[in-house]
Each structure stands twice: as C-alpha cells, then as structure tokens.
Image (cartoon, rainbow, N blue to C red; front, side, top):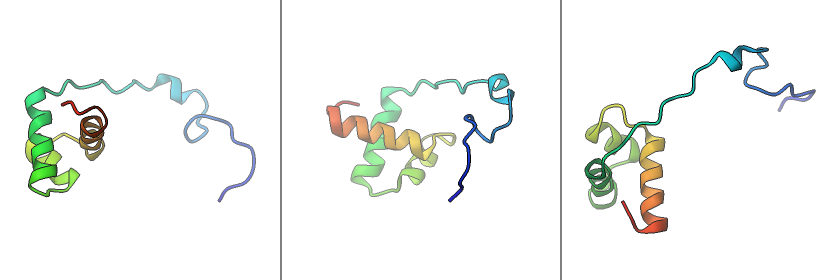
Length: 76
C-alpha cells in the first residue's frame, strides 16, 4: 500500500488526463442483449465467453452490466 500525498488523476501525469478522449458509448441492440443473457443464464457460459461469442468486441464488464440490469429491473 502506498503512502504519501495523492495528486489526483491517473498516474499523476500533470495535464495529460485532460487531453484524453472519452470512450464512446456503443449501442447494443435488444437482440444482442437477449442472446448474451441466454448464453450466460441458460447455457452456462462465462461472461467473457458469452461476450466473445455474441460480439467479438463485447467486454466482460458490458456483459455483467446487461445481466445486472436484467436481474434488478427484469428487462433486457
């Protein structure tokens, strides 16, 4: 564990954080969401496997968000 003063930002690189672009939010269709849910909940695939099988650039984090939304709000 580090001790000392935290300067804020990532890595304390000065103003480099301001120059970074934000990631674009991708639109995921309801059909893809439903397929991901089916793969994880019914077929027992891991989140990473389901994401890669349905859409190659779908991250595990995105898959977990889809599943969390489904479980909490009962919607795709």
